[in-house]
Length: 177
Image (cartoon, rainbow, N blue to C red; front, side, top):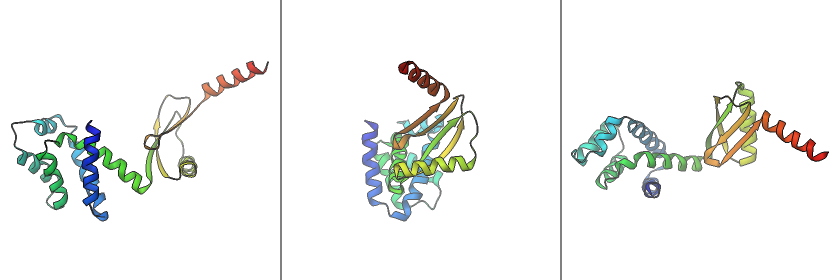
C-alpha cells in the first residue's frame, strides 16, 4: 500500500521537475531518507505533537538554504498530507525511476576471492550485451565457493557454485550409465 501511494508522489515530482533538477532532488531525497534511520529523527517526524510547519522547517533546513522552491513545496505537500513517513519509500522508487531513465543499474558480485578490475569490467560488458543496460558492479566478500552476480532492479541473479557444478556432473554421469 505504501508503495502505491509513494509511486503517485514520485510521478507528481518527476512530472514537474526540470531535467537538470532531477539529480538534485534525488540527492536531497537520499539525504533525507538516510536521516530517517536515526530513531530520534523518525520520532520527531511521527510525533503528532510537533506541528507540520516545524517538521517541514526541520527537513528543509537540514538540506541547506539553496534548496529549490519546487522541492520545498513537495516536502510541504507530503507533510500536509501526513505522508512524511513515506519519504524512504518515495526515495527508493525515485531512485528506481531514474535508473530506468538513465538505463544505469547497480549490481553486486559475491565471491570468496577478490576479482580484479578487469574481470569486473568483463562481467559488466557481458551484462550490458545481455540486457542492453549499463550495469555497475560492486564486489562483496562471501563464503560462497563460486560466484554470484545479482542485479535486483533488472531481476538478474546468476550463480556459479563449484558444489552445484560437481552435483550436476555426477547426475549427468549417473544418467549416462
